[in-house]
Length: 89
Image (cartoon, rainbow, N blue to C red; front, side):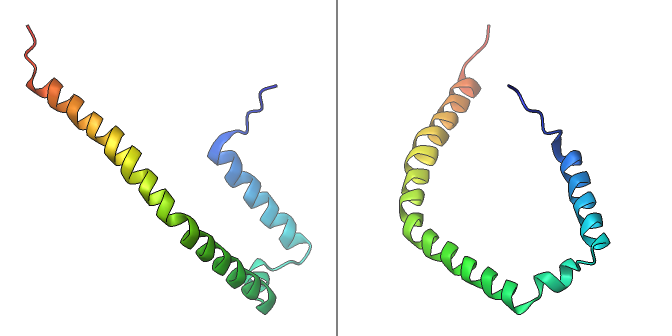
């Protein structure tokens, strides 16, 4: 079963509708975001992401340099160089 979301415009409309509904119920997003509890939770989550990135950044950098730069990018450059230097009849 194929599900079509509707794209970026539909996402923006959904966010606007959600904000209107929250405003109708008296929920102020600015007050929620700046509350000490939310700030503490966001700080904790940022620390978790920083820790996880510290663990995986080495392998990800190695994969990027080895495969994307080493194989794909040099292959693309070689193909462009071959196309640029070849003569077409």
